[in-house]
Every structure is written in C-alpha cells, then in structure tokens.
Length: 239
Image (cartoon, rainbow, N blue to C red; front, top):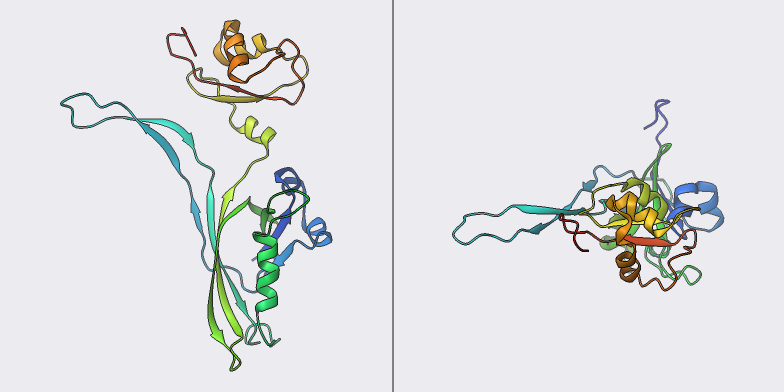
C-alpha cells in the first residue's frame, strides 16, 4: 500500500529480454499485450537465496571437511495468485476463469517466436520493481466449479528465477581474485594481455585464455565480446 493509502495491485509485465525488462514499464508491456494485474495482492511470498559449495577432499581419518565456495545462485521468488470469477471479490461474476488463466499462461510460460523463448518477467508492486526473472514453475489448482463444471476459482503458484542482463551481471560480479572464474565484456582499447593483467595480475596467461575461449584471432578483440577467464592455480603456474 502506498503512503497515500491507495491500494496498489501487483503487476506482472512481460518483456523480450532482460535489457528490455530493466528499462521497460507498464506502457510498453500493455502495448505488447504482456500485462497482468493481480486480483488480490499476495499475502506472503518466498524469497530464496542459495549458495553453491564444492566439497573439499577429506583427509583419511578426519571427521569433517571444509566446503569451498563456488558461486551464489540466482535468487528465486515464489508467489500465489488468486483467480476468482464468482464476483464476490470484484463484483463482476463471469461464467469461467478459463480465459483469465489462458492469458496468464501466455504471459508467463508461452514460447515467443520472435525471441525464441518465453517472456522475461518483471514484477512491480506500487512504484517499485521487486523482481526480474523467468518462470521456473507454474502450478494451477482449481478450487470451485459451476454446476456445468466450469472452474470459477483457482490458485496459481509461480516460482521465478532471477535473470540479469550480461553487462549488469559483469558489473555486479566485479571480483578480482585469480582463483575464481571471471567473465568480462571487451571494451574499446582492451587487449587480451591487458585483460589478463587486470584479472590475474600477470599478462602472460593470454595464450591460455585465448585457447580456453577458442579465439582464433585474439590480437584484435571485438567490442562487446564475452571472454571467460578461468581460475588459475594459486602458484600461478598454470590455468
């Protein structure tokens, strides 16, 4: 609820990719018919944070082992959305919720031919974008039926997984440790030795990085190319 006291409904907006979702809003989503307004705002939601670790080699005769951090997984959020066509909630009774469910599924999980993937989803509550991601799961439970067998009420359980546009992800993951995997986008003036110096503190690994990325022409890098810099041994002797 906003500070003015007006009840703001949660909005689900669909976009072609993460970059459009970052910059787009209600107007763009409505033009593309990729817009859904919740009948009732969720009472609760689940926000999950997951870390991934690799098990270290356990020494013989020891009772435990230290887990080595690998990465932070993308965040996940889960919501329940209510559909009700009895008219009890909005005063607009209708025969069935079938059409509403169809539009909801088209927005969240339908394959789009122009982008060759389902929509990237942006969740907005009030004036705030609370999440951008893709749908992992959609489960619909039908709860009430008319005398003719048409569903009148349903709860849709949706799990979203965060997705971040490449450039923003690179900025967020601006690590500088040589024993981690790094991903960088080539900028004007970048060379592979220079990038290796920044990542590994040593330019000598540029040939190994070129082989790792299968670069046939590494002396002249194209701006915007994504380069993966794999971990190196802490001794600095090899990739």
